[in-house]
Amino acid sequence: MSNYVYTASVILQAVLQNKLPVVTLNDPMFQDIMPISSINASMVVWEQKDDYTGLMNVRGFDGEFGKITREGLSTYKVEPGKYGDQKLMSEEFLTNGREMGTFGDAINIERAQAEDQDHLLTRGISRILKIGWDFVVNGTYSVPNTDGQTLATGTISTQTFTSVTAWTDFANSTPLADLRAIKLKARGYSTSFGRNAKLYVNSTTVNNLLSNRNANDLGGRRTINAAGQIQPLSLGQLNEILSDQDLPMIVEYDKGYKTNQTTQVQYIPDNKGVVIGARDTGEPVAEFIMTRNANNLVAGRGATEMYYDFEIKKNPVKGISTLGFNGAPAIYFPSSVVSCTF
Image 1 (cartoon, rainbow, N blue to C red):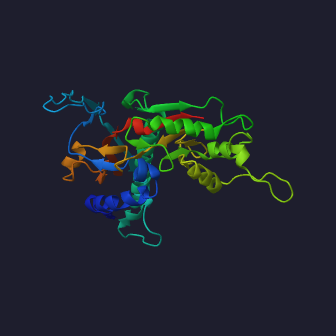
Image 2: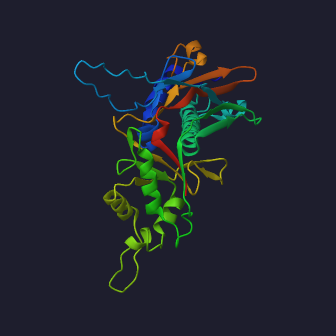
């Protein structure tokens, strides 16, 4: 009877922890907006002090010092979502899952294990990205299970902006004026919506922006060549214009996920976007926090890791790859986020 050759879960778990930084390395959600962190707790809770207000009191010689009211403290709490998938290797798959020309040898399924881990990890990262972009673009996220019941949700009061004239109206929209209006929303907060801030939009919205023909706004910044033809702007040229006016830089973000082999859903919808302000102290405005997971503890691993496990079950035989995590987003500085409709 043939044996099965497969990689121990503890080794694949170590591989997973190496893969995770690689797949998140170049995504601005994890690098600039919502880095992944972890806490050994079952709930995501954070506190934020109210803004400091007022001016110092004047006093004369021997006069009393002014007494000021202590600032308030707001507490926010989000229950972590519990996420996880399993991918099965059927009896038929395991029976035929040998290398070619190795009749009678042990059946090696290590490559299939690694591929299944990649598949599960991709789905996990896509879920975090969907939650993150929903939260900053819409101020809320909601995750239903396969029966349509919402099992994970959160809402935060970000700042909002809606263009008076949609950017799809190339002749009349005013994107420069819109961004100047957004810049003013930094007043009263320890953030900047100037050139150090970033506006994330998808490729369709970028195309609308670059197609602007309003001579009194962005369209008036397009150049004319020797033949008298009006030249289109590039994204690089646009950002130079925005930098000169100390307005947010445009970041084209066109990633999404597939619901099936033919349907792609963008994380940032058409005509939507989000401005992420530059904090005066440099810290990120949000984090995605991995929380305590009992499945990890049973497996003898770190309580807050994204975990992977593999097991062979009998009667009938099947291989099971499992990957999951518990976690939720926390937006520490919602005033540094402007959810936009263009």
